[in-house]
Image (cartoon, rainbow, N blue to C red; front, side):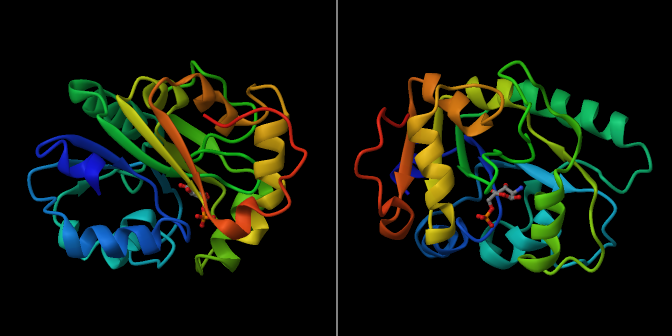
Length: 218
Ligand code: GLP
């Protein structure tokens, strides 16, 4: 909340998903977002308009006060590569002041799947099988999405501030990897450890059993 209030007209890049929902509920009650530029971190392609798993739909539900000025890539244009280029150019106009992100079970950030390096830009991506599964089982997608458009790691690494949120016991394994493995493209979340103003916030259930893990977070 303070990170948002510190930037009354800033540019904020917002993840969607289960992790951020309770945080957005607090922000929705307490912060005025009407003067911020809000970018979606990512969006699924190939889902019909109105599909509950679309990131735009998720953010409308979890952050209703901001629903009229959240901008995302135009995944319905029929020209995904161009849509990604346009979105990349739009973000480049201002850069990102604050990014609020979660971590996927495979270590992805947004839809930067394992293999995404620090130079990766906003682009069309093929989704990992587990990300496709998660869209159906966790977000109730009506069809299995195979691709999406994501803000790249390079744009996130260039953000002024990044807040990485992790919650739930199902994230214990990825947190242990994150804190125990050297940073690299096989674990895109680990790349944020080189960011000088990134914070990793882990809830109790995701942080359990970390005794003995070497290394530190971002
Ligand atoms: C999803 C989204 C990300 C999200 C992450 C964690 O696939 N593409 O933006 O932050 O994975 O999701 P969740 O919080 O639902 O576990």
